[in-house]
Length: 139
Length: 352
Image 1 (tube, chains in turn orange, red):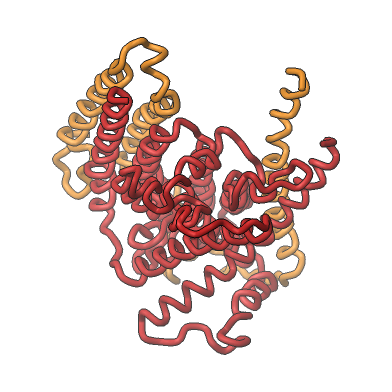
Image 2 (cartoon, helix red, strand yellow):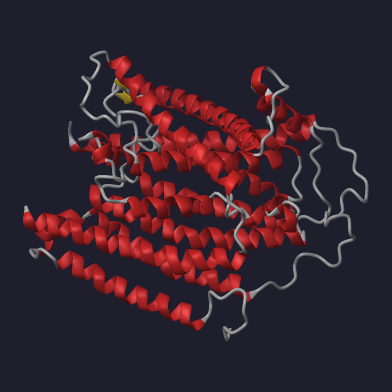
């Protein structure tokens, strides 16, 4: 098998995944459309209102919410990058002694990196960003 | 092998896997109602068909025929896309899961895996992250305060536990050196249960972190705060009706099945028998394939049962406890697990 045909083969491995995407979203769209046409529609003004346990809704749901959700999202991005960096390291970990020429280089490299992350995590906890029940965090 | 034959086989596999997956979702719901019923000292559904076996079908039909109304205040484009994203991601994540040995092929096409990707694990993680959008958008576009609170909680919870989930997988990848789920299973096939990652691989901590984080990822008890019905009506899908509600429901149970499959593949040796080579392997390839499928299904069933068992047993977390647990305990323990695993691996490599 020459290199070009094997490359085509490799890309074709993703074809079932594409088909599954089509099947998954096609099925979803089909369900929504079918149930829209099958079910009856009888709308009244009260029925179309927001359901908040029968109490008339005051205002809409576009108000403010706790800034902690935003902080968590920010922290997630920072720490998710950490996970992303660890994945390729984990895959080639067994070959690292050969690549770097040193038995323990790959290990200490990641220890240093994880050390920084651990300090960051320690700082976050001490800063009180994860304390949801008290207000001692100065946000 | 011609491209057309490959295409034909792929379409067939997609159809079969999707059908089995949806059937599995329907009967997981029945299983849950039955088992939770027995835990609470009652029968569960038992009227429709023998042992209530037609219950999920009838429920599905009922949801299809229900009135599908869109409340007046919603932001329609996102309101309609959100259930699609949820169900789509749930169905998509099963595509990279291998159900049986890679050696069983028909005309060179692997029978038991939809897409044999060398980055299967990364695809899974990526698709799982995408499913957060379904819940976040559903809550926001509903224009309901309960929905918004539920989806905010849920998004924060899911992204927090996704970190621990991703880190717990690193230990397995370290041991195997591959993202391919089939390779990870192959690496656990040497000595039966002793070479599974949870025992011989020493990844039991990683497994416990994975299963905890996965319960939070799928919004299941004891982490089912997004739809805490005592405080938030029904959480992010309060304003959804008919099939759109059913799609969120199916997505949740579909994610349960995928999580169980992945736990089986990564930590419990996939389709390998726990006895290893103690018994002679059958010569017939069909029997081999069926035996592999049998072990896989048994293990997945065990994890599904565990899900339901946990739901029937444990009370719900408080929100601050939930976030604190994820960030302060699971995340550092997952990091320590990586350090430990790589230390042992390096020591073993240095000795050999």
